[in-house]
Image (tube, rainbow, N blue to C red):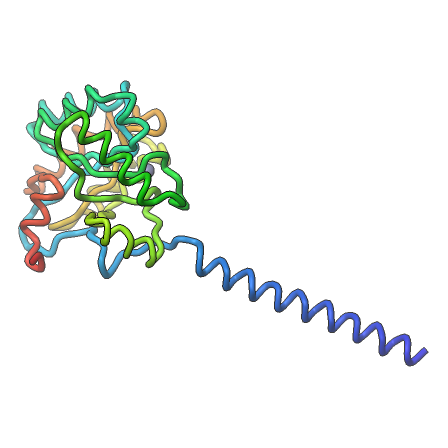
Length: 241
Ligand SMILES: [Zn+2]
């Protein structure tokens, strides 16, 4: 009877040990491979400036429905923005890429397929850049990882590839479709001089983003803000060398 109890205890401890070691190994493996949000150092998500400037950025397009509406509003308001395009969407809509550049906007790189893990990071980045270059004759300089997720290794790889990782400092949270007023509030409550604002012109129906855009521009201007592209914002960064 005693031996039986002893065995059971040993068996229990053995299983516990296997679970613990297994768990530690899985966590260690994950921490090495799961991308995590990198805000600093080495990423660009705001400009150090006292001046009331901010940059509007749009991800996941170009989209044949929503991008033209957004471009119309920007044109009417005389605002230049930055569009982080997906290579796949760019391939299907080269005329929208041409329009973006023609109207003075900047094009950033947002991967080809929006793979959060970015397993083919450099390949996708180059693929997207080729699409942009074919349509517009310009290369992409800023890269924004899907979801903003990035490991240190990936960050190093992007730098070696000659691109700058651009994230954001103000999330409009338009991707949640929280309602037009909420999108405007999310921007206005968090904006500051040098902020990079995240919005979307593709990937899903962006009706709320389209409706929120003019009120956001008006509210920012009422507060004294000037809206610029990412490259322009970077030139105003006092820490930019
Ligand atoms: Zn995205």
